[in-house]
Amino acid sequence: MSQSPNPDPRGERRSDRDSLGENLDQAAAELGPGGDLAPEGDAEGYRKRMARRREVQQQRVGERNLEKGLVLVFTGDGKGKTTAALGLVLRCLGHGDQVAVVQFIKGGWQPGEARALQVFGEALAWHALGEGFTWETQDRERDRQLVQQAWQKSCDYLADGSRKLVVLDEVNVALKLGYLGLDQVLEGLDLRPPLTHVALTGRGAPPGLIERADLVTEMKLVRHPFREQGVKAQAGIEY
Image (cartoon, rainbow, N blue to C red):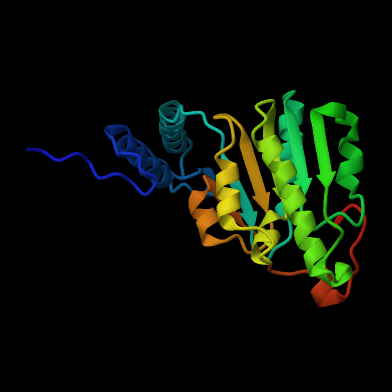
């Protein structure tokens, strides 16, 4: 008796389409992106390579036709985690969708992006429900209470089918500090309708969240003007 294919880590069974996708990915990698990276020195040889690359890319795009609400994690020590999530916010708003942003920990100031995005009116719900960094608040139990309140607000939006995207800004920090449980967050993610996306930002995303995510991007710190040059946080860059 033949055995069924082994399920992958997400519980989904591998199929011929999975193998086709891997083969197409390999073909795309072998053909390369073109430019001066292509080995052909003559125009005709280069044209043939790029024509084949286009065929492979069209197959790759056509073969991947699923649609689902994604869990996107932006973490790491480098700058740009919230900025990446807000890029998604702007993109969704530009398509006429409704978005919610819930900021954990932050809240002692109004960032420039919150002011700029007011132009979208009720299409964007923005909640900064913290009172600042731990060294500013100096009240652990108050911080914990505010995080739990922010989480309840987040769950309301996660379950709201009218919101295409929900951003949980700095929620990873709340997890790292112990103010929020990983089980709480994973259960909250399950509240989403099938096509609702959620972006979770902040340093130190726990392994359990990374495993649950569909996309994980880790920002790597290479240079930073505050640490290396003593440059203060500046309007339009940090806030």
